[in-house]
Amino acid sequence: MKLYLTDLSPNCRRVLAAVHQLGLDSETEIRNFNLFAGEHQSDEFRAINPNVKVPVVVDGDFTLWEANPIMIYLADREGAETFCPSDNAPRIEILRWMSWEVQHFNRALGEIVWETVAKQAFGLGPADAEKIKTGQENFRRFAAVLEAHLADRDFVLGDAPTVADFAVGSHSALALHPQSQVPLLEFPKVLAWLQRMEALPSWAKTAPQAPAEAAE
Ligand SMILES: N[C@@H](CCC(=O)N[C@@H](CS)C(=O)NCC(=O)O)C(=O)O
Image (cartoon, rainbow, N blue to C red):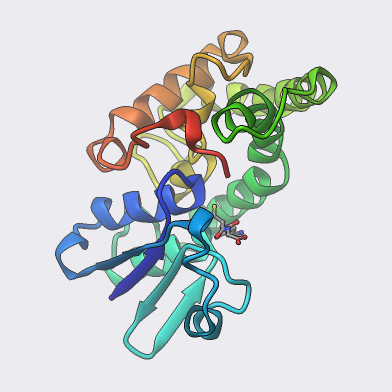
């Protein structure tokens, strides 16, 4: 199996962490693109993913792009019932949180950390205070939902980490970065959960070497 990815990407981190979680390391060949050097901008890669984006997995004749479906595919392939249950009810719950993180939680988080961490790391100009404020307002709105949900759970579906945690928590390194200005202290359950994520062996293995640069 071949996995196309790039360093410092929350979208790629969740997939690589899933590979570790599922014990697929030895059968996974990694192609790590330097996006800044445009290494992904080739006809060969465009034929694999017409969006010209990573992550992508190629498993024999089967090619799949988009981080969340890739995690589900890998978990199903391995029959990993705890990591991604096959029953309908938890499955729908996973899809709900995945949709929510893309549209709301990580979008809000991305609005903040783009300004506070990424722009500085990439030399893209000064942070825009108005955008940080808007991002923080959006983050507070959605983090409150997760805070309430985590009141009696260690992970999104219950006692054990699942693909839903890998999706919702994919920006953990950025959120926990000291310069992030993400108002995490207002949400102690969310903060503790992000720290629990970072402590998972599969997650820790994929920690960005320079989280300040984990931009997208
Ligand atoms: N929705 C996609 C997002 C993929 C994405 O935005 N990938 C970025 C890296 S995090 C990328 O490949 N950017 C390169 C480009 O747009 O040229 C997913 O979940 O996999």
